[in-house]
Image (cartoon, rainbow, N blue to C red; front, side, top):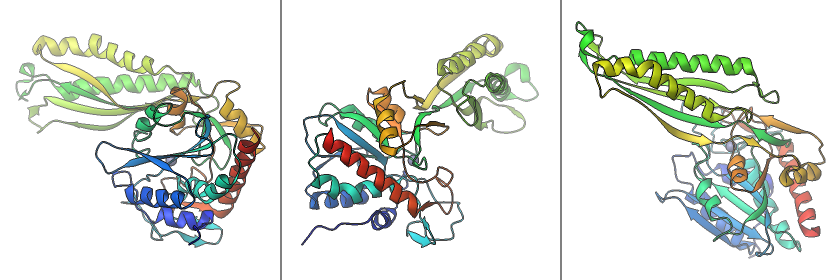
Length: 387
Ligand SMILES: [Zn+2]
């Protein structure tokens, strides 16, 4: 039987039908992709997660002994729970020029274009190979791609550069903010609320830390050191607070979940060390006067660095040339691109669909975006054959 060739839309329909919400398994989707690639004579290699329910997939089309052009996409999607969808999110539904479905835009659209194009890549006499880098758990802190990046240059061939197809409406993005998440645990001492001097109120101590974070946020907003970004500054936000047991008990503990999204010009260390200094010098001494074991501990829970592609970045130069554009953009969301760049692989972000549709109910992609992306992949094939 001749191997199946699917159009980008048909491929997207197939990919959307797998519910790959980050907490769920992505293995049925990966099995489908492996089978499809194998039917076209393309081998692929898994990089499984420790818990066995997820895997990344790496494939090489063309020569295996020279660095290639990496095409990177995450296979997981954000949850649909609590969202009001007017179609079944896991059945690709066309209405006019729009294709609706969870992940249609972020970012199964890009993966669908790549897989639809894979047989054409395979037919070409490529001098530079095309590497496919499909990950998991991007939506929960870009954690799934990290084990695969560690293997690049070892078990897996290293790419020369990486094109990350997050939705940018096919514009070339060379910079994004960082995302850093933290939990600060304040430990005080319980007492009867009528004997406050015998306890250490963890929530009120936490309140002082929240005020300091608010001051830092205000100052960073005034500094506005990211004019290319929207908004043009680093922001700090406290997002969740838990603590206390009852109104008449001095609370012994309080947890603060907070985060910041920093522009490349802001040093992330500045924020964490300032909070630590404030805690140590302004909050903790009075707590320890009453209770020597009182503590304030901050643990980093997630980290995606900012991306700031250097002048003359090979990935950015190639993307601009092949997309026929001469302007780059900066975005406020994080991507796997900064992790590739940090590991020494020049990276750029360009992919079909608008970020405004990502994560939203009734997520969709314009069919024309898939066509533009397929044209871009055709340019990559021409370049990889000639160079
Ligand atoms: Zn995404």
